Length: 252
Image 1 (cartoon, rainbow, N blue to C red):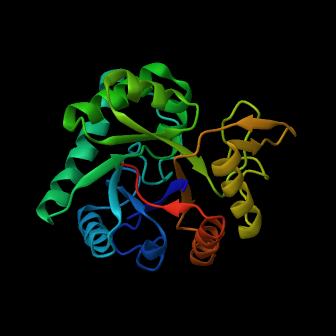
Image 2: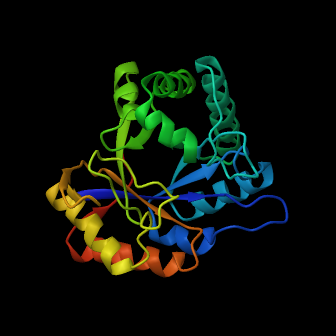
């Protein structure tokens, strides 16, 4: 049986502000990427989300981002390699400590937003992120966009990696995600998203915006928990995957 990990970005509330439907979506995913306080989240939200993940038997991952609360980590900030290393080590280390204090186990790391997107194409940035993850715990799995530099950097330093695809995003012919600044960046029809996901898993192909099929390796699929119909979307995607005879479980 083919298997896939279903991951979702979580813990992105902050103080009195609530974002996403973490508690409701957790039963439908196998991995949670928990924000570490830089682009979203705070220490209390981090602990609360870790507890929820443990209660639901969901694998826990750190979701480090750029120090950009106002822009939700989606704006560009220039970083020297050592700055990128420190930002990632600081955030992953913080979540690692909370997970340990709750009796859990940190399983993976997935960079967020602009940090993720730039590291997908920037080998130097990708190497800094991979080294920080490895130095904290060489048994952690590093998630990265299928075909991107993060996966190459992770393998180079000796990490296990997770080749990530997206359920609700469209693709370009070079295998990158369509920019969120473009009108056609998001797939809002759960049925279409489910078809894209199952094809990526079963055939290793995704249809790009330019009309071409692109080769792609799907080991973990991301769904987002902060959309207006996020819960229904998560249910639909999981049902589509399971109906195709594909098992759902965390990487590793």
